[in-house]
Image 1 (tube, rainbow, N blue to C red):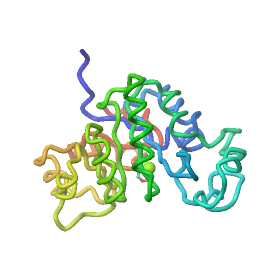
Image 2: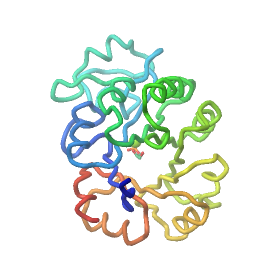
Image 3: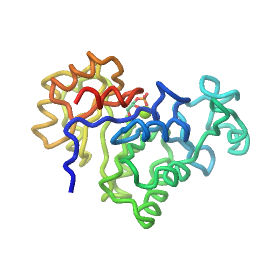
Image 4: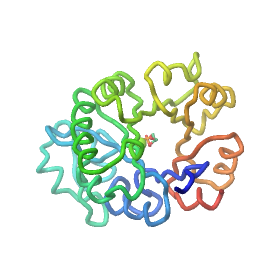
Length: 234
Ligand code: G3P
Ligand code: MG
């Protein structure tokens, strides 16, 4: 069996440096570039789970409005760039089909955890392995709910800043990883997380010298819009 890479290349929103973010095209491109893991953002639109970063549609599509307030049919009629539709979580799972690991970031709350847990339970029945999945969120109560519903699926706590009690929140939630902002990659935070047995990944790192700096700090991987640059650094 091949050894897991020591410095993970995580394609950010697929590979948003190359293709429209969070689309099937960007995700497939990230896989083609050799990413070990692909990150994408998930939120609820009615009863559906869609792959989109912003709470509004204007920045990344030709539509307008809040994702939580438009219909799924309207959202699916939009162009997310290069003629791509906004994908659903199930479509991403079908496209990737176990070729790489996935980091599914919960963007919305209020039922997102439950809906994602239900879809991932089906994915596990379809052959996905728990170690191929990592569910993360900045919204820690939503992440906590996910952990209660699907305790077998690894989770990562997202932080943007340096918490007063360092990586304690990740231990408290039973997380496997702490995903930090590269801006706040404090050596004490990284040390504390490692001492707790957590993996540490930083977002979003695109410049080769920054990727090298994160590696020198002992991180276990970085999210990059250009996942091939992370491969070049190891
Ligand atoms: O999950 C890492 C990173 O994607 C978190 O920030 O805003 O790009 O979703 P954001
Ligand atoms: Mg994200």
